[in-house]
Length: 113
Length: 117
Image 1: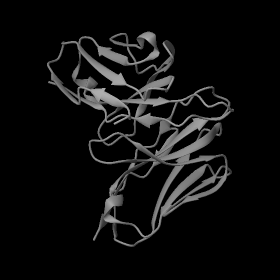
Image 2: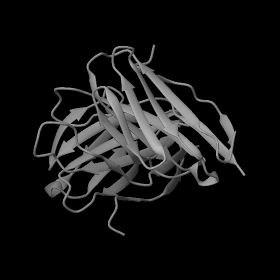
Image 3: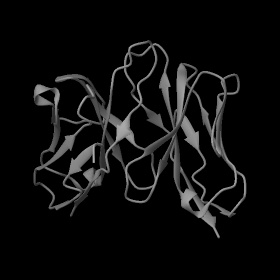
Image 4: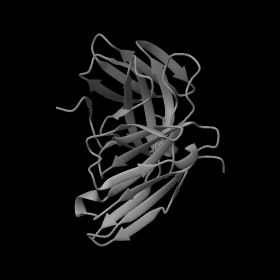
């Protein structure tokens, strides 16, 4: 079993929809949680970064972390065709001196006009 | 462009050949990471440098793989005697060690796509 599980999709939504992307994890040591966006044939780009449990909002994006359930989410409001990409969750254990990322499989999202 | 750069972007080689990839991090970043990403999967950690010191290597990094970061600037990843299973995207990321406890923010390059025939 992988440490981080993510539904690969693909997920297809109409423009303007609210998108919910999720990851579960098994390692309770994870303390730092990120969401990356990766366009085809490009490197991942950091979207959101959160520490421990709670919510964080940045424009149309909201990240939620529920450590008690070992579950994290990314919500995209008013989705746009330019949001079409692969979304990767990533995590780092607390107490480490550097950022060795453990990624989920990635969810492929398509937003159609 | 002041982001992370990687060269070449694509490499096609025959099984058994050696290949070398280069990563140029963001100039003030002292941390450098290599990851490997296969089709339909998330990136997997390979190795990590703090300045010129290689501080961790994943079990994924077999003896055929070697990475260097001379003078703490650019880094190279070499694969000897390539195998078809080495076909993947090789990603480099760099970051600046945070002053306070907590994790650093990694910035990824565009990757080098390796195809082993």
